[in-house]
Length: 81
Picture 1: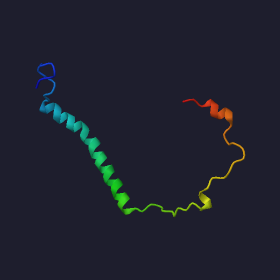
Picture 2: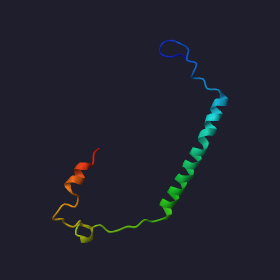
Picture 3: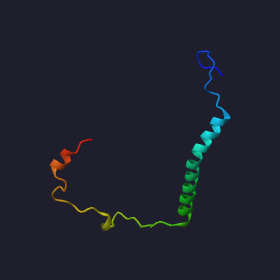
Picture 4: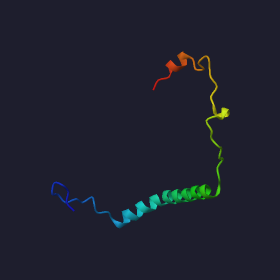
């Protein structure tokens, strides 16, 4: 293989020893990923979540009106990002 400047690219060839070492190093990560994905999709299929009927007139979903601010001005000004 040659690069853009016409020189022979010697880094593109990977030895089989290096490739097998690379695959063995990532195998536990991929195995754990597949196990966790299987657990997730199994739970999603068989476990139903809590479902609540939503209505705009439901008063339990409303926030109470605050006459005075609950976070003092000095606390808002003291936080920097």
